[in-house]
Image (tube, rainbow, N blue to C red):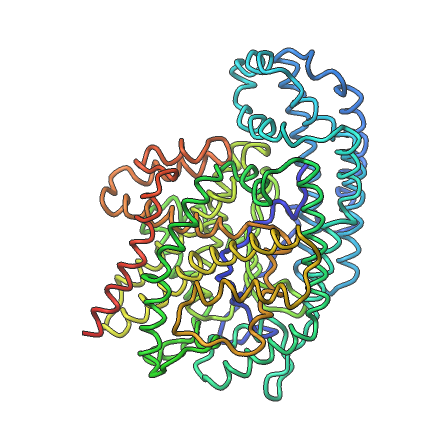
Amino acid sequence: MQHFSSRRSTSAPRDLFRDSREGSAPALGDLPQWDLSDLYPAPDAPALADDLAWLETECADFAADYEGKLAGLDAAAFLRCVERYEALDIVAGRIMSFAGLRYYQNTTDSARAKFLADMQDRITVFTTPLVFFSLEVNRIDDAAYEALFADAALGRYRPVFDRMRALRPHQLSDELERFLHDQSTVGAAAWNRLFDETIAGLEFIVGEEALNLESTLDLLTDPDRARREAAARALAEVFGGNLRLFSRVQNTLAKEKEIEDRWRKMPTPQHGRHLANHVEPEVVEALRNAVVAAYPRLSHRYYALKARWMGLDKLQVWDRNAPLPIDPPRTIDWPTARGMVMEAYAGFSPKMAEIAEPFFERGWIDAAVKPGKAPGAFAHPTVTPVHPYIMLNYLGKPRDVMTLAHELGHGVHQVLAAGQGELLSSTPLTLAETASVFGEMLTFKRLLAAAKTPAERKTLLAGKVEDMINTVVRQIAFYDFECKLHAARSEGELTPDDINALWMSVQAESLGPVFEFMEGYETFWAYIPHFVHSPFYVYAYAFGDGLVNALYAVYEDNPEGFQDKYFDMLRAGGSRHHRELLAPFGLDASDPAFWDKGLSMISGFIDELEAMEE
């Protein structure tokens, strides 16, 4: 049974969220906010009470009807069982989506936090009787399993159960599985909430202003270098002051994971994520190795170029996402941003724009920066009978437009995949970033084609290269950091200095020799939520970017019929393996050369930027 945290899909963070000041500047226009009534009208709505009552009863009835009996069911009876399980998943997912989205609108509201915690507790209790389901499925012998899923109607669900059975070697006893399910709300989920509420409540003093995290991070893209430096130092001061708490969160979660992984006989800390993503460890290793080998021709080369543009011998960390000197500051209002993205989507396919339109018209986007609102951006699919919701923190910067394009890509993907039904719609993270990054690429290419001057083209290319470096290079560096952190934690408790040292060990390697690192930067691991919420999630961003670069090259080389194949891929949701989905495009992610093709697009953009210097 899936809860909100496991269904949440976040955009590529590029490790600095692009949110900022509390409230919306009038120049941005009328920013949309969520209408959650398609889930439930209110926390005290009778429909919600009815669903909770139904869920409690139906979970108990389901267990009474099927526990101990799955191996004896024929295909027709097993199909009815699966359909009942899917209905339970929908109602539980609907409740948790509503509670989670309300909470992320204002994480400092104690009533919302209590409502989310109460719903998590009740759903966990209600669904504990269902723990038997996956355990019994995994005990069906292979011959009986093959015979059962030879049935056409039931066979449609086979990918769900194949993924379930991949966990057979790591399955614990029924009693232990029930225990882990029962205590989940006071385990990782509780530490996740502590992290979220702490982050949302931090205050940073920059000059005379007291700012929240999003506002302060946003200043790292300010044209004024002194202002960027002040923001970076404020971040370091506050992170340093809270480092014991953040270290405790990391130590506890990593140890909890190590214990469970040991009991489950997981060969590596990353293995559970690979299983969840339905991707082979060697494919991820090929991606990781290709990116690390490319650091010198990507990030090292680009940042050396940026230092020359800025007239600096060395870059400081507050220069990494600085606008170029030739890039005049500009604010893009919401209607203009919407037009840019929708024109790019429609230029690829009118159908894509048609799917995206309701997000703007029906309260499916929450865009304004507000006190207590969660940082960053995400697209949450909720449940298949409803629709996704997108969260942004929109400030009118060019990168915010790309974030809109990214999250809208997620939304389009989730709408199309919903046709698979609840159990088959969820896309593994490695493919979940495909439509989002593709949406960004469409928007970027449209803007690049419309550039009127060499300076404008240079600014666009540089911005895209930085985004790609942040999505590929930075995320793989983050992945390496997590690998080192979990390996070190298995040997014993980590001090804040230990974690800081692990963080810095990947920074110079990935960013290159042109960087100097200020005192305090070693603490910047502390605020990145993926390390807390979704260990080893981050490689999915690099996977998605590399995949999309290869896909886009296929599109440019042979656009005829590409759209139909692309939409078929998105509609598949989680019903097919990445190998099957990429085959129509002539692509294979298990081929190490595949990743070099994607990385060559980034290096090609840097080639063009270097040529502009000659």
